[in-house]
Length: 378
Image (cartoon, rainbow, N blue to C red; front, side):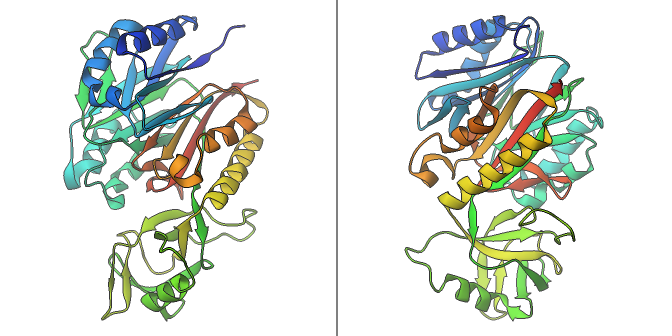
């Protein structure tokens, strides 16, 4: 029995050679149904001409091309170079969807464009230009009836390129690839952080500003958390919904948010529009050891959850703040994934932000790795 999915990568080669290699990879599948393609470096700056070459190479195969700060496959990660990575698969139907939108109405425009394609058993990968995107802008995506919706922010101003059969390549500010007739992936997210304080309840907030944490003024709590830090590391706020009783996880799923400002008068911390009284909150820093440990835990849990099914292929969207800049060496995350899933065909990119389920709804993530694993009954 042949493979039902395949990954491909090309590093520092000419566009002509890279797209020929991609075409050869597609031929190794009996009947490919779609492709996700990620590019970086000169391929990203010349993404429109590259898309035309890709379409010539793969013919009538629907696909989406997104530009990242780096790309990856199960064999490793490429950062700061010109490269292409792709995963192609058989089965189901694939529809590229383009959205020309930006600014405050971005999320609403994306939701409206995807509503016609949303089905309870369908999956969607969504990619957006990062400029000006704030977490609350994606709230309209919560209304979409997809089994899973994940995605990422691209690098710079490169458009998202859509390849629809019978049409010229289309460049858009936002784009999605909708998959139907294929088992939705199991998705897990892993933030790259170490908590400096225990999760504690927000007891007072006003708009995006946290005023009190367990009755303590928020700015006082921040000062206490940061007082023993050296080298002035980047501080985050980690947010979580209420932990449920009987939850076997050590921590509830976390959302990382930057500290946007402080208010010395009200002793408050400006975080994001998501904060509200009753949420759990902690201060955190980016940390390599904690990031690796959490990814090992998350991938182990994902492997157990998919036991009994045959893994087919995966997509890994990893924040550009992870990778070598976090670990001091390359391929750390992909080695962790490979240790759990072996030669599972995998492709992805280093992104400006990530979109993954949180509390049952698609939510903007930061400094996070998002792994989606597609399976079929064994």
